[in-house]
Length: 65
Image (cartoon, rainbow, N blue to C red; front, side, top):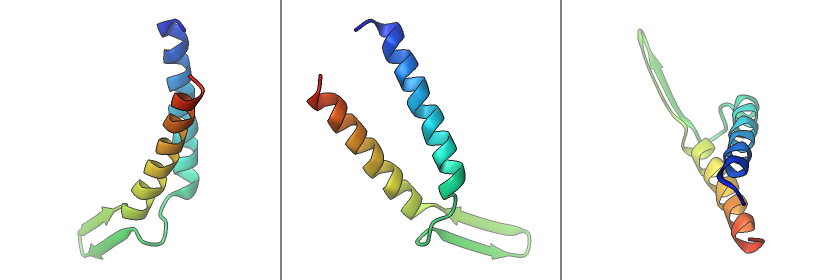
C-alpha cells in the first residue's frame, strides 16, 4: 500500500476521533476542580476510552494486514 493512502486513512481516523471527542466530552470519572480563577481538568476516563478504541483499531489493522 502506498504512503499516500496510509496518510489519507490516518487523516480520516483523526477526523472521526475529533468528532467523537466533541460528543463524549466529559465522561464520569474525569477529574474536574474549579475554585475562583483556577480550574483543573484531567480526562482520565476519556483517555482510557480513547486508548481502548485506538488499541482495537490498530489490532484490527494488524490482523487483516
